[in-house]
Image (cartoon, rainbow, N blue to C red; front, side):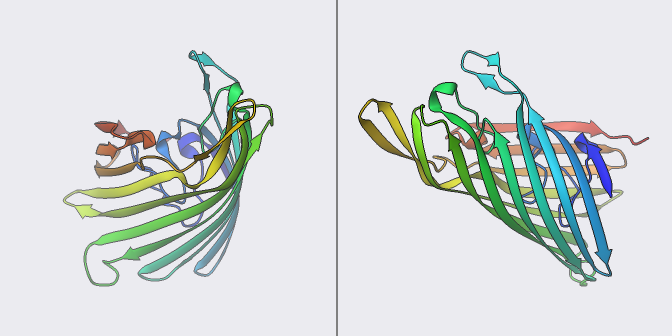
Amino acid sequence: LAAGTGLAAPFLPGESGQPGLVAPDALGFAPLSGAIRDRLVAEVALGRVAVALGQTRSTGAGLLPGGTASRMAETRRTTLALETRGRSLGLAAQLSREEERDGLLGTRLGPAFGLQGSTSRSIGGAVALDLAAAGLAPVTLRVAASHGWHAARLSGAGLFTRADGLVSTAWSADLGGRLGPGRFRLVAAAPQALAGGSFDLAPAPGELRRVPAAALARESLVEVGYALGPVALSFHHRQHAGHVEGLADTGGAVRLRLGF
Protein backbone atom coordinates (compact mmCIF):
# COMPACT_ATOMS: atom_id res chain seq x y z
CA LEU A 1 0.00 0.00 0.00
CA ALA A 2 1.53 3.32 -1.05
CA ALA A 3 0.42 6.94 -1.26
CA GLY A 4 2.05 10.14 -2.44
CA THR A 5 1.59 13.47 -4.15
CA GLY A 6 3.33 15.28 -7.01
CA LEU A 7 6.65 13.74 -8.03
CA ALA A 8 6.40 11.47 -4.98
CA ALA A 9 3.19 9.85 -6.23
CA PRO A 10 3.74 6.07 -6.54
CA PHE A 11 3.81 4.40 -9.95
CA LEU A 12 1.48 1.60 -10.98
CA PRO A 13 2.88 -1.69 -12.34
CA GLY A 14 3.90 -1.27 -15.96
CA GLU A 15 4.31 2.52 -15.89
CA SER A 16 7.64 3.97 -16.96
CA GLY A 17 8.74 5.24 -13.55
CA GLN A 18 11.11 7.69 -15.30
CA PRO A 19 9.16 10.92 -15.93
CA GLY A 20 10.71 13.09 -18.61
CA LEU A 21 10.85 16.85 -18.89
CA VAL A 22 7.89 17.05 -21.31
CA ALA A 23 7.55 13.52 -22.76
CA PRO A 24 4.43 11.68 -21.52
CA ASP A 25 4.06 7.98 -20.82
CA ALA A 26 1.09 6.53 -22.72
CA LEU A 27 0.25 4.51 -19.59
CA GLY A 28 1.19 6.99 -16.91
CA PHE A 29 2.27 10.52 -16.06
CA ALA A 30 2.09 13.46 -18.50
CA PRO A 31 4.48 16.21 -17.26
CA LEU A 32 2.75 18.97 -19.26
CA SER A 33 -0.67 18.34 -17.72
CA GLY A 34 0.09 21.11 -15.22
CA ALA A 35 -1.80 19.27 -12.52
CA ILE A 36 -1.16 18.45 -8.88
CA ARG A 37 -1.44 14.69 -8.53
CA ASP A 38 -2.42 12.62 -5.48
CA ARG A 39 -2.38 8.84 -5.75
CA LEU A 40 -3.18 5.85 -3.58
CA VAL A 41 -2.05 2.41 -4.77
CA ALA A 42 -2.79 -1.05 -3.38
CA GLU A 43 -0.55 -3.70 -4.95
CA VAL A 44 -0.12 -7.47 -4.64
CA ALA A 45 2.84 -9.34 -6.16
CA LEU A 46 2.73 -13.07 -6.82
CA GLY A 47 6.06 -14.25 -8.18
CA ARG A 48 6.66 -12.39 -11.45
CA VAL A 49 3.11 -11.04 -11.64
CA ALA A 50 1.99 -7.78 -9.99
CA VAL A 51 -1.63 -6.61 -9.76
CA ALA A 52 -2.60 -3.16 -8.45
CA LEU A 53 -5.60 -0.91 -8.00
CA GLY A 54 -4.87 2.82 -8.09
CA GLN A 55 -6.94 5.90 -7.29
CA THR A 56 -5.55 9.14 -8.74
CA ARG A 57 -6.86 12.65 -8.13
CA SER A 58 -5.52 15.51 -10.24
CA THR A 59 -6.33 19.19 -9.84
CA GLY A 60 -5.29 22.21 -11.85
CA ALA A 61 -6.38 25.80 -12.23
CA GLY A 62 -8.41 26.72 -15.30
CA LEU A 63 -8.98 30.00 -17.13
CA LEU A 64 -12.24 31.43 -18.36
CA PRO A 65 -12.38 33.72 -21.42
CA GLY A 66 -10.71 37.00 -20.53
CA GLY A 67 -8.01 35.37 -18.45
CA THR A 68 -9.96 35.17 -15.19
CA ALA A 69 -9.34 32.12 -13.02
CA SER A 70 -12.19 29.67 -12.60
CA ARG A 71 -12.58 27.00 -9.94
CA MET A 72 -10.03 24.21 -9.85
CA ALA A 73 -10.50 21.53 -12.50
CA GLU A 74 -10.62 18.07 -10.96
CA THR A 75 -10.07 14.62 -12.44
CA ARG A 76 -10.52 11.32 -10.61
CA ARG A 77 -9.11 8.18 -12.20
CA THR A 78 -9.46 4.57 -11.06
CA THR A 79 -7.03 2.12 -12.66
CA LEU A 80 -6.58 -1.64 -12.56
CA ALA A 81 -3.01 -2.50 -13.58
CA LEU A 82 -1.32 -5.84 -14.32
CA GLU A 83 2.33 -6.52 -15.05
CA THR A 84 4.35 -9.67 -15.61
CA ARG A 85 8.11 -9.54 -15.99
CA GLY A 86 10.60 -12.18 -17.11
CA ARG A 87 14.35 -12.10 -17.47
CA SER A 88 14.34 -9.86 -20.54
CA LEU A 89 10.67 -9.23 -21.38
CA GLY A 90 7.95 -7.37 -19.49
CA LEU A 91 4.27 -7.03 -20.37
CA ALA A 92 1.74 -4.67 -18.80
CA ALA A 93 -1.93 -3.80 -19.20
CA GLN A 94 -4.25 -1.19 -17.67
CA LEU A 95 -7.98 -0.60 -17.52
CA SER A 96 -9.11 2.85 -16.35
CA ARG A 97 -12.23 4.88 -15.65
CA GLU A 98 -11.96 8.64 -15.32
CA GLU A 99 -14.36 11.36 -14.18
CA GLU A 100 -13.44 14.90 -15.19
CA ARG A 101 -15.19 18.03 -13.95
CA ASP A 102 -15.72 20.95 -16.34
CA GLY A 103 -13.47 19.49 -19.03
CA LEU A 104 -12.68 16.84 -21.61
CA LEU A 105 -9.11 15.49 -21.80
CA GLY A 106 -7.92 18.61 -19.98
CA THR A 107 -9.67 21.00 -22.37
CA ARG A 108 -11.95 23.52 -20.69
CA LEU A 109 -14.38 25.76 -22.56
CA GLY A 110 -16.41 28.82 -21.64
CA PRO A 111 -19.89 28.42 -20.12
CA ALA A 112 -21.54 29.20 -23.47
CA PHE A 113 -20.45 25.81 -24.87
CA GLY A 114 -22.27 23.87 -22.14
CA LEU A 115 -19.47 21.39 -21.43
CA GLN A 116 -19.88 20.33 -17.79
CA GLY A 117 -17.42 17.43 -17.71
CA SER A 118 -16.80 13.96 -19.08
CA THR A 119 -16.57 10.28 -18.26
CA SER A 120 -13.79 8.28 -19.91
CA ARG A 121 -12.82 4.63 -20.15
CA SER A 122 -9.48 3.51 -21.52
CA ILE A 123 -7.39 0.44 -22.13
CA GLY A 124 -3.62 0.45 -22.53
CA GLY A 125 -0.64 -1.83 -22.79
CA ALA A 126 3.15 -1.75 -22.73
CA VAL A 127 6.00 -4.02 -23.78
CA ALA A 128 9.45 -3.63 -22.21
CA LEU A 129 12.49 -5.44 -23.58
CA ASP A 130 15.85 -5.58 -21.83
CA LEU A 131 18.17 -6.06 -24.78
CA ALA A 132 21.18 -6.44 -22.48
CA ALA A 133 19.59 -9.42 -20.69
CA ALA A 134 18.77 -10.88 -24.11
CA GLY A 135 22.43 -10.49 -25.14
CA LEU A 136 21.67 -8.05 -27.96
CA ALA A 137 22.67 -4.53 -26.83
CA PRO A 138 23.25 -2.62 -23.56
CA VAL A 139 19.89 -0.81 -23.74
CA THR A 140 16.25 -1.23 -22.76
CA LEU A 141 13.30 -0.55 -25.05
CA ARG A 142 9.73 0.15 -23.91
CA VAL A 143 6.71 0.81 -26.13
CA ALA A 144 3.28 1.79 -24.75
CA ALA A 145 -0.08 2.72 -26.26
CA SER A 146 -3.60 3.47 -25.06
CA HIS A 147 -7.08 3.90 -26.51
CA GLY A 148 -9.93 5.77 -24.81
CA TRP A 149 -13.68 6.19 -25.16
CA HIS A 150 -15.26 9.42 -23.88
CA ALA A 151 -18.75 10.61 -23.02
CA ALA A 152 -19.15 14.38 -22.67
CA ARG A 153 -21.62 15.76 -20.13
CA LEU A 154 -23.47 18.66 -21.75
CA SER A 155 -25.86 21.10 -20.11
CA GLY A 156 -28.29 21.02 -23.04
CA ALA A 157 -28.47 24.81 -23.02
CA GLY A 158 -25.10 25.56 -24.63
CA LEU A 159 -23.64 25.69 -28.12
CA PHE A 160 -22.81 21.98 -27.96
CA THR A 161 -26.02 19.97 -27.98
CA ARG A 162 -24.66 16.45 -28.51
CA ALA A 163 -21.41 14.48 -28.67
CA ASP A 164 -21.01 11.15 -30.48
CA GLY A 165 -18.24 8.57 -30.86
CA LEU A 166 -15.48 10.41 -29.01
CA VAL A 167 -12.30 8.32 -28.98
CA SER A 168 -8.67 9.12 -28.19
CA THR A 169 -5.27 7.52 -28.71
CA ALA A 170 -1.74 7.93 -27.36
CA TRP A 171 1.60 6.17 -27.75
CA SER A 172 5.16 6.45 -26.47
CA ALA A 173 8.49 4.72 -27.14
CA ASP A 174 11.44 4.88 -24.75
CA LEU A 175 15.04 3.78 -25.34
CA GLY A 176 17.61 4.02 -22.56
CA GLY A 177 20.83 2.60 -21.17
CA ARG A 178 24.24 3.36 -19.76
CA LEU A 179 26.55 5.77 -21.54
CA GLY A 180 29.86 6.48 -19.84
CA PRO A 181 29.36 7.22 -16.14
CA GLY A 182 25.67 8.10 -16.54
CA ARG A 183 22.52 7.02 -18.33
CA PHE A 184 20.96 8.32 -21.56
CA ARG A 185 17.31 8.32 -22.56
CA LEU A 186 15.57 8.89 -25.90
CA VAL A 187 11.78 9.24 -26.01
CA ALA A 188 9.35 9.70 -28.91
CA ALA A 189 5.66 10.15 -28.20
CA ALA A 190 2.26 11.34 -29.38
CA PRO A 191 0.30 12.61 -26.34
CA GLN A 192 -3.34 11.68 -25.83
CA ALA A 193 -5.68 13.45 -28.25
CA LEU A 194 -9.13 12.96 -29.70
CA ALA A 195 -8.90 10.85 -32.85
CA GLY A 196 -12.56 10.51 -33.78
CA GLY A 197 -16.12 11.52 -33.04
CA SER A 198 -18.12 14.69 -33.46
CA PHE A 199 -20.07 17.45 -31.70
CA ASP A 200 -23.42 18.87 -32.75
CA LEU A 201 -23.13 22.67 -32.62
CA ALA A 202 -26.12 25.02 -32.50
CA PRO A 203 -24.73 28.52 -33.31
CA ALA A 204 -28.23 29.98 -33.70
CA PRO A 205 -31.82 28.90 -33.00
CA GLY A 206 -32.93 26.33 -35.57
CA GLU A 207 -29.40 25.90 -36.95
CA LEU A 208 -27.37 22.74 -36.36
CA ARG A 209 -23.88 21.85 -37.54
CA ARG A 210 -21.85 18.68 -37.02
CA VAL A 211 -18.24 19.48 -36.08
CA PRO A 212 -15.48 16.81 -36.16
CA ALA A 213 -13.91 16.33 -32.72
CA ALA A 214 -10.56 14.93 -33.91
CA ALA A 215 -7.55 17.19 -33.46
CA LEU A 216 -6.74 19.05 -36.69
CA ALA A 217 -3.01 18.58 -36.03
CA ARG A 218 -1.58 15.81 -33.86
CA GLU A 219 1.28 16.70 -31.53
CA SER A 220 4.45 14.62 -31.78
CA LEU A 221 7.59 15.07 -29.73
CA VAL A 222 11.13 13.85 -29.23
CA GLU A 223 13.09 14.20 -26.00
CA VAL A 224 16.68 13.23 -25.27
CA GLY A 225 18.23 13.25 -21.84
CA TYR A 226 21.35 12.33 -19.90
CA ALA A 227 21.48 11.76 -16.14
CA LEU A 228 24.53 11.62 -13.92
CA GLY A 229 23.68 11.05 -10.28
CA PRO A 230 21.11 13.65 -9.14
CA VAL A 231 21.73 15.91 -12.19
CA ALA A 232 19.79 15.43 -15.44
CA LEU A 233 20.10 17.35 -18.72
CA SER A 234 17.15 17.26 -21.15
CA PHE A 235 16.36 18.67 -24.59
CA HIS A 236 13.05 18.38 -26.43
CA HIS A 237 11.22 19.36 -29.62
CA ARG A 238 7.43 19.35 -30.01
CA GLN A 239 5.78 19.61 -33.41
CA HIS A 240 2.16 20.91 -33.48
CA ALA A 241 2.53 21.55 -29.74
CA GLY A 242 -0.74 21.29 -27.86
CA HIS A 243 -2.29 19.90 -31.08
CA VAL A 244 -2.10 23.41 -32.58
CA GLU A 245 -1.15 23.26 -36.25
CA GLY A 246 2.24 24.79 -37.03
CA LEU A 247 3.14 25.55 -33.41
CA ALA A 248 6.63 24.28 -32.50
CA ASP A 249 8.29 24.17 -29.09
CA THR A 250 11.99 23.53 -28.56
CA GLY A 251 13.71 23.73 -25.20
CA GLY A 252 15.90 22.18 -22.58
CA ALA A 253 16.55 22.11 -18.85
CA VAL A 254 19.04 21.09 -16.21
CA ARG A 255 17.35 19.39 -13.26
CA LEU A 256 18.67 18.59 -9.80
CA ARG A 257 16.74 16.03 -7.80
CA LEU A 258 17.55 15.23 -4.19
CA GLY A 259 15.85 12.82 -1.80
CA PHE A 260 15.56 13.06 1.95
